[in-house]
Length: 137
Ligand SMILES: [Fe+2]
Ligand SMILES: [Fe+2]
Image 1 (cartoon, rainbow, N blue to C red):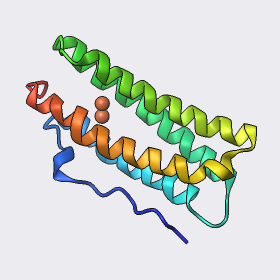
Image 2 (image 1 turned 90 degrees about the horizontal axis):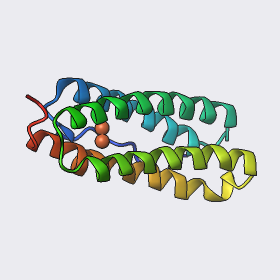
Image 3 (image 1 turned 180 degrees about the vertical axis):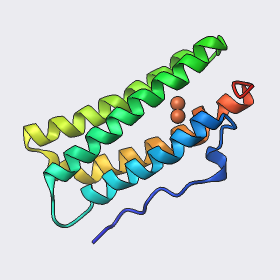
């Protein structure tokens, strides 16, 4: 049984930067896949680790794109935005470490809620501000 709802695409996520919006839609699909597998009954650790690996690879490339756009525009909030990106990468590493350390099962609900809230909050605040800052020129 799945207790956690999928993240649904919202208009407030739109940045107006087509490359960023395209990647955000892909990322919503990847994170929903991770959440669905983590929340599933069958506790398939290999599948969760594979899905986390896919998310990690895609999001690392995505952060590089956004950080390049911000640097090129001398974006004023570059540092806190990059720090928030690094917070998610730390979270993904924590989940992977929890598999190794054996406390994944106890922390599973915490991980799912952190992942969900990071994406919804980051997309609708920090990323949507990129549009208002004129990075979509
Ligand atoms: Fe983003
Ligand atoms: Fe971002």
